[in-house]
Amino acid sequence: MRLPLLALLARGPAHGYELKQALEKLLGAAYPQPNIGQVYVTLGRLEKAGLIEGEDIAQSSRPNKRTYQLTDAGREAVAAWFDEPTDEPRVRDEFFMKLAVAPGTGMADQVALINKQRRHYLNAMRDLSRLAAAEDRDNRVAQLLIEGAMLHLQADLDWLERCQEELEKLEELE
Image (cartoon, rainbow, N blue to C red; front, top):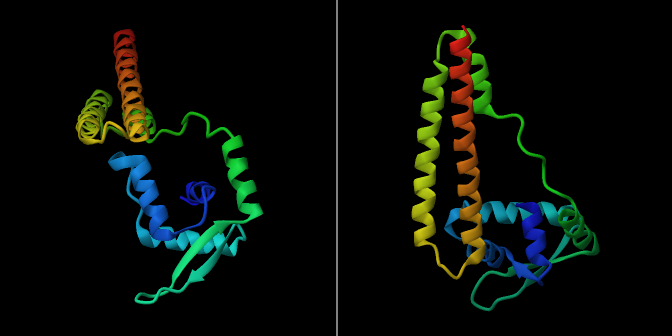
């Protein structure tokens, strides 16, 4: 949440609720909606770190509003974030660990694990399809987020198929 908030502040000063709304509008319903408390806690930490500075704005009929803007250090942090590629593909996969250790435990069947995981992915794919249909077609960012998640799920389903094929080959050799 830290770096996306900084990036939103690169547009100009804003208060926490405006930042929360900007994230929700940009990412749509597919992305977990940020909690306003989490936004303000993160803003407080960013301010302590010297990446943003806050200013209290007096309001006549309401409590003061605090707006935030990037400092030079905050602008450098955003530039560095955009410059760095994201993490490499996941190698530490919890499902694969279950699949690998299951035979030695006598507590789980590998094919049953694959089938259960496949059902889970297919249900997630169905949920994303519904979400895509309900999402505003003009929100291309949200549509791309949903499409990316669906492509990842399809790759995971293909990989599960490959795992099952390999297990079947191993059984034939035994």
